[in-house]
Image: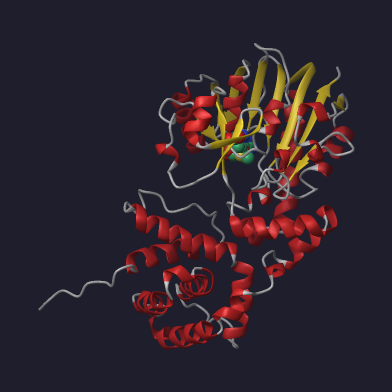
Length: 433
Ligand SMILES: C[S@@+](CC[C@H](N)C(=O)[O-])C[C@H]1O[C@@H](n2cnc3c(N)ncnc32)[C@H](O)[C@@H]1O
């Protein structure tokens, strides 16, 4: 008897469905790694399917509402994840062919004891979707952002920015690097465009980061152009003692070391600190590393500068993490705000009189950004805003608010270069006494 083998492409579809199912269940999205799927082509395809299903989630929700009159069958294992992957393929990835979307979806749920009774439904739904795929491909892009998110952000950012966010969600984020040394030969070898200061943007993402020239020699690190702004705004003298609260995995720590400060990098998460140590080793930097709670840490001596890159809803990273749009909740934001207040209050306690405090979040929520800066000025007695000025951000003046804080988002980029940037808020304060 010959052993029955699985059809080609099934394994990667099962892995993609598993990853999508966990994100739909509330997990953070991380692309499948070489450890999860050693074959590079399979891995790229599986990640393309999952990211397309996540980016297009709002439109796929509308398709599912139309295709399944009674809604998704309850307790049906991987049915929903497999259906979403197949709809993403049929409608938005036509180069992959319709046949495999239908055939492999049925094969995938046949192997799931909780879903195998639904093969007939899967087949019927996908056939109906196939006959509507041209119409679905033109589906309203205003469905891309959840309605309550679009409403909240419309008031804050305006209609043009919302349209830019929708396009940014579809296209994803370019790859930005921060250079350890601004060597024109390296920039050319990387095929990169200078953005602002030592941030560059890669024109092509066809090579893994580890294969880029200069990676092994630690000549750059991956960091979105927006994420590289807060550390630059600290603006202290070389040799200043700086505390990087919430430091891991260390993008900003590396910038502080590059600026010549004596850096203490603190984080509460041991695994993330391991990544910080590995990153610093590759770059040849040596911060003091402390595992502690940033809300209660008490230094023996106050610092000249504190950078607080606080944990937040991370809605500004939706180009890489589309799931944050769907996982966002008023309750979650309120919880973060309480944590941010505790962290800010302790950041202030760690600061010497005359010292500088940078508060940053990769969030598009005013409650975690603009309102938090107002809260700090009211609650922390000897804190004054040190306005950020246009000269500090050539090419990105549009990101400076009338109050002198910084607000960037995916509809903006230095010098108007294509590709936008993550949503970030930054405020700079001085402890007056
Ligand atoms: C936005 S990330 C920091 C990114 C980092 N600054 C960088 O540029 O690479 C937030 C970090 O806060 C850490 N964190 C969350 N709560 C914390 C706490 N109470 N004390 C210390 N670190 C905390 C998380 O482990 C996470 O690494």
